[in-house]
Length: 383
Image 1 (cartoon, one colour):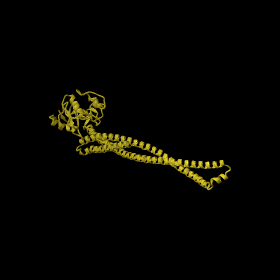
Image 2: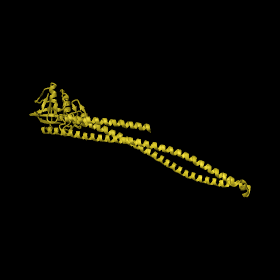
Image 3: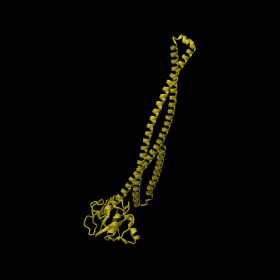
């Protein structure tokens, strides 16, 4: 059968571009793998190509899923950065608003102080129209005159001092407002840059997820094709044979393991027997396939056999290698048929009248072992 901060942002952006390039290369690779199916000219080549494509597609799907996970982590990181920057922007905006409110309040205070100073100046102007002698004469005494003069001087000094403080504070607040405005502009630009990287990572994530989905679909399609062809082959073998449950002198023993479906395992190596079908390449083909069993069994019998490809290629390969190939069965010979999509091989364990009793693997398309009875005319034999 078949052998089936800015510098941080720049670094993150560069990593995203590299990941994108990897994705593009991976997509190209999977396209190349799938295209090999178009070159399959026969059914046996089709199943080999389908199995290879399924394995390749599964590998590609795993790679795309890994890329998708990486991109998702990047998206999460970018979103966290955006959230952190937005929190800083909120604080800066609150500070900006607070300073703006203080400036507005100071402007009101400055206007009030200007009004007070203006009123004081007007009063001083009115008072200045009276000579000191007249003011002294109008005062009850010299002490009253001095008190009035000192009071006006103090009021003027206080107003001027207050206005100076307000003006100085206004300048300080204006400087702070300008700084906070610059900080807001910088933070908003940083947020926009990180948001751009997040969008790019989301695009890469979508591409990887789409590629992984396509690869998974291809895996399913290839596996379905392999199963279909194996089922067809198993049906042909079943129609031509029966299981043999008697005693066969000299037949190999051994039971248990994944390749035992009630007929033992023939002594097939447990590592190959328990591994998933086609997961190991043995010297004669994929594990738990008929070619792997035939090659292994012939080796146990001390008789040579080579890896000649699919089962339906063994007869021609054996002739080319100098082996005798004819229609006469003999114990220990390889029984080969080209029936079905990719043929079948087994090893003759006994001859009973017009029938042969053979040991065989994967008679059911599921990698199981058995002893089977066939009409001797069903096979040709490699001696």
